[in-house]
Length: 230
Image (cartoon, rainbow, N blue to C red; front, side, top):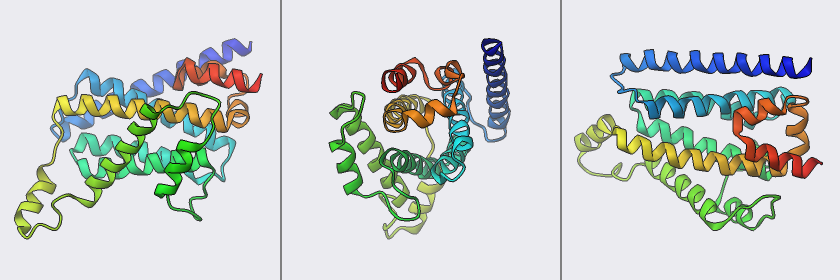
């Protein structure tokens, strides 16, 4: 009976995500966005993370980081479709910061994410592999997002040039594909670290629904969860 209920829940989530991606496809026509199969796959990947964090938020409604992550995922997708690269990076930076808050147990109200937080992340011992390559990618993406937010040419004396750059900074299809690969790698690393630090809590949020968890973020994090809690 429980397996049947879980199967129905996964089917419902799949249908929900499919409708969500189709809605994005419709929206993309309004903003002259060349919707590709790579976009469809990436947006479905992000949709799964929205659902994942909804489960976590239901398990701990006081954790503001989960709510912010859900919002950031929505607005990242919208920024990509609308060609608003700067706002895409605004949301990416916030996603990285709120993953770090959840992993490093940092209050949203009490602390900003600083270089010290990244140093502590690198030195921390996790229940999973977290090597220099994974750390460097996360750090690099954070620096890149900060660079786009503050703008490399924002202090240029030519006001019209800066305005034109802000308006016309759009992703090509090739650039988007590379970006999607990097972000998926970052989130997969973060998911393992989140499981490592919050295994019992995540397990409770997906009580008797571990196949749902596997569908949302993959088999590897689920295997890690079982290694920690069993």
